[in-house]
Length: 198
Image 1 (tube, one colour):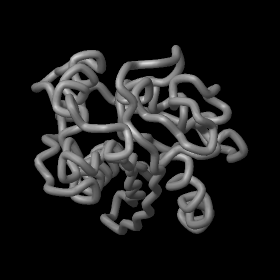
Image 2 (cartoon, helix red, strand yellow):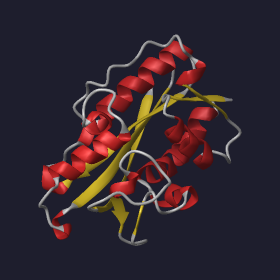
Image 3 (tube, rainbow, N blue to C red):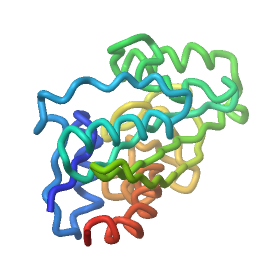
Image 4 (cartoon, helix red, strand yellow):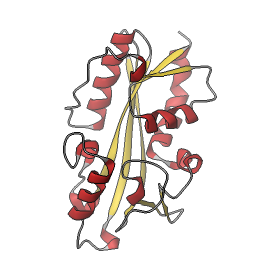
């Protein structure tokens, strides 16, 4: 059975495939449907953006679709960048530009006040418009300079206390056990069978 992951981000797609590998699914992405119009992520929450993406893609492809919206909320910045995580430094910003801006915004903030939370909302949508959603979160702190070679996005700055390493310093396999997306997917796996059995 086909399952569309409503993303063209190859890093995210790789994480989804790794966590869903036990299911008899053909995982597709937006790259398999180049004619789908771009979804404007103008929601005020991760849920609103994920819902919009999931419904648009499910209706367009006529296939069950999972969409995620995720980002990082930094305590000292009153929850920013939040839904603007991917475009914190502007539209089409690179990971490096976003990380540079985050570090600049946190200049002068002491290590004990740099708490942050990665959040992920996953929405699964049927072509007929039926949806369900799950959430996952992972708390950590923002360090003062990037470390590590794995991961993407804010991973090099996000220190996970239980490992005393950033998301970019732990292996993808380790990250896929504890990340916000992994925790949301764990919940999704519990409801996925009822969608696939129809």
